[in-house]
Amino acid sequence: MVHLVTLLAVSLLWLLGQDTHGFSAVTTTATSCRRSLMAPLFLELISFDSEPEPISMLAKNNQKLPKEDEPSGEESRLEDQFPIGSVVQVTAKGIKAFSVPAAACGAFDDDKKTFVPSAEKDVKAKAFLVVPVGLVGEVTKVIDSHLSASHPIQVKFDPEAQTDYKIPVGFTFHFSEKEVKLTTTT
Image (cartoon, rainbow, N blue to C red; front, side, top):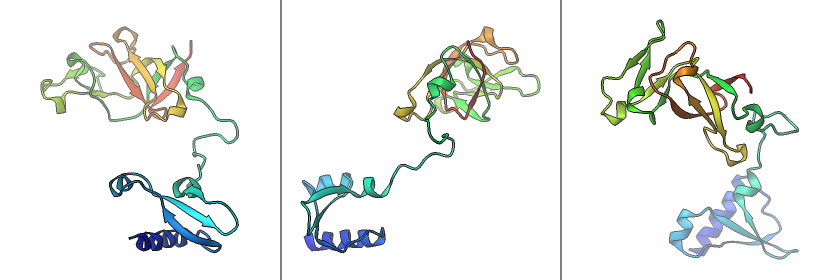
């Protein structure tokens, strides 16, 4: 079994383009077969001229690439782009808000901009609000961008604050930075 794992590890290094010359042995470190199936494979490469050093193949080969949206140099923070208390407008189409009060389940007529309640509010799979493009809300919380939340901007929608759309009740919903745009800051 150890020889098979050694052969697989050397083959993996060769496929990834790693230099396998100068290494006397390749072994795996795992406490049990059951645990090793769930944990990432760590290789211990033993060189002729140094002490054994554990190297994570994931950490060595997958270096962090800059995102296309991030400016080079200084990293921008979502907390600075969307300050708490600022007003944002929904820009993405087809967003379904499932965690809304029963009175808010439904959709909006695009032409008249009026709310059409859902007929099936009791069925959980169909109890949602289709958030219209142009709905205006206030930013109440922004999750730190280093925590990598998928929808870090929490927006509160108030029925009295709406200009175009009249929502029946207020609700709070999370958005990504690509789904809303900043309209005014306070």
